[in-house]
Length: 225
Image 1 (cartoon, rainbow, N blue to C red):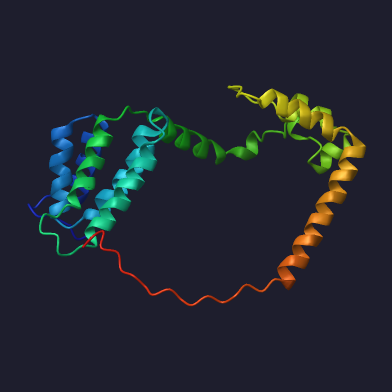
Image 2: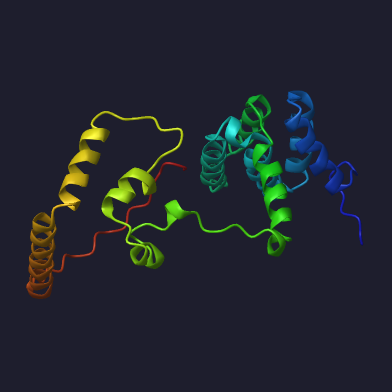
């Protein structure tokens, strides 16, 4: 396979590996060095792709907002890059910020280890297939209905939340729903009301013809001029 090299003669894939390893270890100087080498060599999309991966592979649950922030910085990079007349090349700002953010972020490889463990384990699923747990067979499933599961079973088992952080009014809403859904009279009335509303919507949408407005004159944004 032909070797792909960077501006200063490095092997591209070795540079990418060094880039991620320095970010992973929190080495700002090293990460910036290899990041700039990728940038100046024209491998900018490759560097961004690697940073997307790092945000989940090396940071993940330690800082769940990392993926959102890297996506946002990439969006900013693309917008700034669209201004070809910017002599200051300000699109480099979000690129650098992305590297610095990843370097200094709390890190965890939990996601990557879990991916490898569970996908590897699934290769041998035939020898230890899990049964569907009974609490999953609730009133919303075919087998649950056959077993005679009820709304109350859903509230006691099916809707059980682990690591539950109760929010204001949550229990009041839950109790009200449980009362309503166990009341056949209320359910019948709600079903009828929904049907009436859908009929009314259908009638309105079929008869309503909005006026055709004149197309607005296109205006070009000067945000990135």
